[in-house]
Amino acid sequence: MPLDLTEHLISSETIASGGMLTVKRDQVRLPNGHTSQREYVLHPGAVVVVPVMENGNLLLEKQFRYPLRQVFIELPAGKIDTGEDILETGKRELLEETGYRAKHWVKLGAIHPCIGYSNEVIYAYLAHGLNAGAHQRDEDEALEVFELSMQEMLAKIDAGEITDAKTISALFLAERYMKNNSL
Image (cartoon, rainbow, N blue to C red; front, side, top):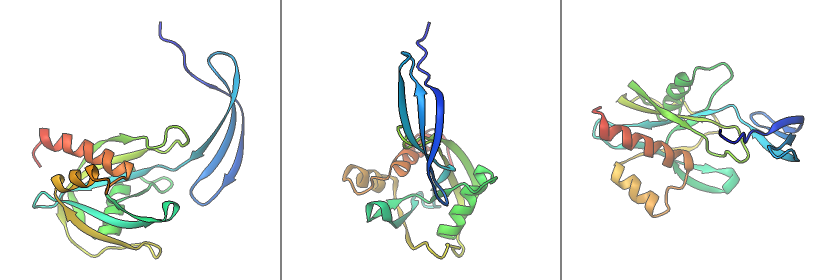
């Protein structure tokens, strides 16, 4: 019989609440009967898109990320708005950030990037059959869009130039999908 590893909620309090995130502190009963405290972040979820260009390259972004005060290389991504369909989030974010629309979408899977302190889930999609247009970025978005081949991306991961967890995870899922399926 498998061991029950579930922690059971005793009480919960909200420590902080902002425009997107809420920080909670819960008292829990552990499987061994002891109690403990858990602090964690509630997140609305997000979608990351792996856009595949006609030439096989992938569409990427460079974007400054304030918490770490540096520019990161990432795949297009964004948070799910309240009540929004997950695929629609991917379509919206791809268009807003890059100006591209895709004819074909493949759900690659779900990524849990911060399981120790957040409930965030990032849904990964592969998008191909891209058509270029004008981006529709928010006022507070500044980014550079560019292409890299899969091999160039993997080399940048190996060199430590791409460290974003959602990008690395989505690329892993996309590479596996692309090896087994034609686009």
